[in-house]
Length: 124
Image 1 (cartoon, rainbow, N blue to C red):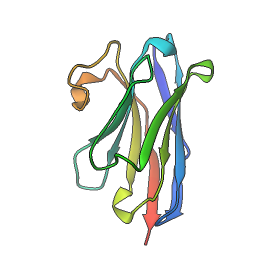
Image 2: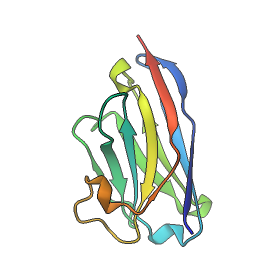
Image 3: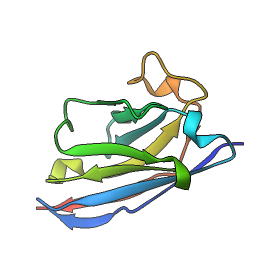
């Protein structure tokens, strides 16, 4: 069974950076598409970025140019580098994966596996 474990969240000042990690186990990591989502209090879980098996990436407009998704297959890990953080980036950040490429990759119901989340808080 695939398991995902996020880490790297914390408290950071506005304008700062964080790198989140998601450790994958229970399958052939290199073949799985991987995504990042976030959920702020009182809001729906929102798509941020996805990376396919060939490291092709897609981003939500809200984070394009500030966030970068990458994967390191040798370590079974996907990353989310977050720069120029803003208070509105405060949320729980989740890693997700799918058994096959999700055609509608922005829709959360396309993903089969989810991590438990890691809290990111950006202070003003």
